[in-house]
Amino acid sequence: MNYENFFLHYPEPLQMQIHRLIQDDTKLLTYFEQKYPVGHEIKNDKQLYDYTCEFKQRYLKNTPRLDNCGYKKQTDLVKNALGTHAFKRQLHGGKLKAKHHIAIALQLKQAPEALLRCLVVHELAHFKEYDHNKAFYQLCCHMTSDYHQLELDLRLFLVLDGKGMNFY
Ligand SMILES: [Zn+2]
Picture 1 (cartoon, helix red, strand yellow):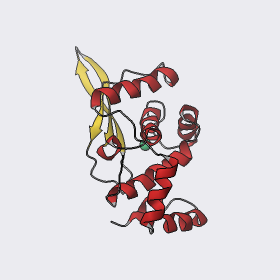
Picture 2 (cartoon, helix red, strand yellow):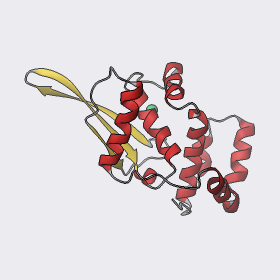
Picture 3 (cartoon, protein in one colour):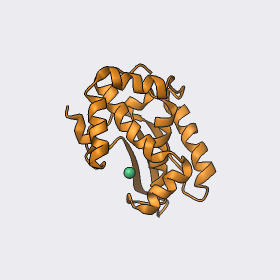
Picture 4 (cartoon, protein in one colour):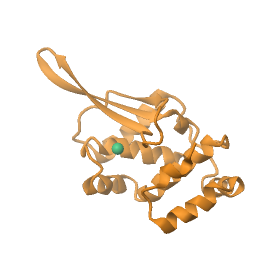
């Protein structure tokens, strides 16, 4: 897999740093061992649902109910579909109701809590903002202040996992 594809939207000097990191397995592993020594304990869909709802309660009170949340094998990681937030409109007693489903890439089951949080926060922000616009990222940063750094680390984590070095 060409991992560089994950990082194309970053400024060039940063891409150079990323390149050096992901080409050197020892460096990449050390980066994660030092920054995120341990993994989270959110190991099943029930725990993931509860974890997600805690953030929703705290930051997005007046949003519709989250119907479903779970780990799922995502097929196209290059398009950054690490998580999905699906709105399905269904008819209930003559009324059209939206159902909200959040899916989190299976790779995140064994991962640092901060990186799972980054993805959860991202998918939750779609309750308010459909597009990845300025307001969207402001909301993400409101829910976890280091959002942008976490998003970068999340992509680096995919490289770690893809290379078979996921130790979480
Ligand atoms: Zn999104």
